[in-house]
Length: 270
Image (cartoon, rainbow, N blue to C red; front, side, top):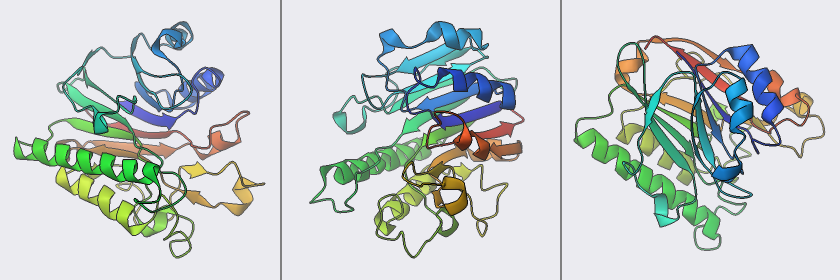
């Protein structure tokens, strides 16, 4: 089974790029973030034409929004998980996905970016980000205490680059939102609380640079290569042994009207 996560940065604007993604990676499931589309305007017909008959969407006008597109049947975990920070702001969607070895619990997250100022008191957006991750950590810990995640996958734009080589310069980005110590420690705590396993770093050692996002502000993003790894795929320990391949689709950053994030794929013998 191939699962892809991608912050598409407007599903209606970049629907043609989904066709390119599907042709290149042949995924079974695509998890999108930042769809920027209310549910009634989601381009279901265009997505169905790409071969994804099973879809779940949770969106709003102009920002946020998540969607799961699948070639395999699934059941929506509607109401089974928290309304993060009580905001109802369309940052999480979860399904029970049909798979040969049994259902897979799939979570699609879009964690708040956090604004520009890494100060909880001065920046409400940063406070929201930290509160969101704290709630997700408590949720992960509660699930662990109830028996742990089984056959589960968590993907998404988590908006934090937790490791030293997840950013182009660890030293220069220590006070930049997405790589500050309070954020990286928080995301690491969330991962540990749920006993999650970093599926992409399974293939790319932690001492190697790995990015999934390059800013629109760069005049030549490829030449400067000042990236960050903001997009993640985690699996429960019982699926880690089935990880068989991965791909970070860096060339997608050169597509016409590209998102600033690129698709990330893992293949699991599930």
